[in-house]
Length: 245
Ligand SMILES: [Zn+2]
Image 1 (tube, protein in one colour):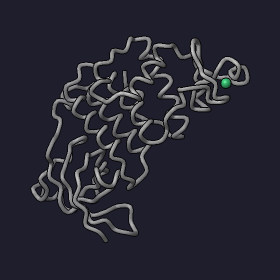
Image 2 (tube, protein in one colour):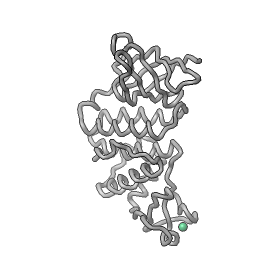
Image 3 (cartoon, rainbow, N blue to C red):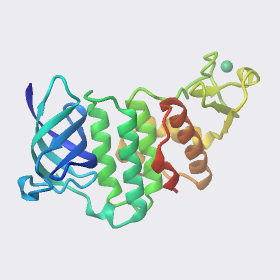
Image 4 (spheres, rainbow, N blue to C red):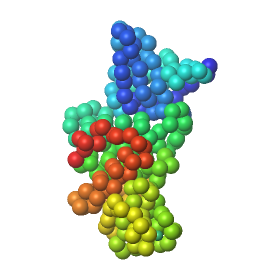
């Protein structure tokens, strides 16, 4: 058993018996960690946190070898984002990110890039006038950082450079050139604007991406491509996706 101190973002909580709570956390040092906070419902003052979704907490947990649920002995809230909860669109975008992260990331695997992305996303969401735009950026960056990156630099089948009118194959997870597309059904056309936006978000830091404007038609395309791609490759439906704009 190891005792670990780290920082964690709360993704979800569920009550455990009358007195305790299980928290699904994304930690800086161990990625996704599930932990029990014993007695927190009976005596909320036992921990200095309200376990709000997307709040950032300093935690100490006992990592058991033979269990995927560990004991959280300390949890102090250090940053939370009340402005997210005041707005239904921000809340929906936050809910979606938590669900997606929970489904896409393996248990207890450190990913510093994803942790930083999650913090950047929470902070931007707290001030966002247009949370839907942030969701696309989060999806694109999370796919790249978690190893699910769609193949958008060249034809996924023959490797040739693609330009002009291209199509996206959800099944193959990438673009297909006009020569290869004849062999496949169910392809989605991708405009040059949508492709440029995907590549831009993948290759630029978060702060720079925040300045990128997406036209309504590009957003519609990205929503269609990214949501279908995620569902197909994760083999899981993201329930909160239907509430997104
Ligand atoms: Zn090809």
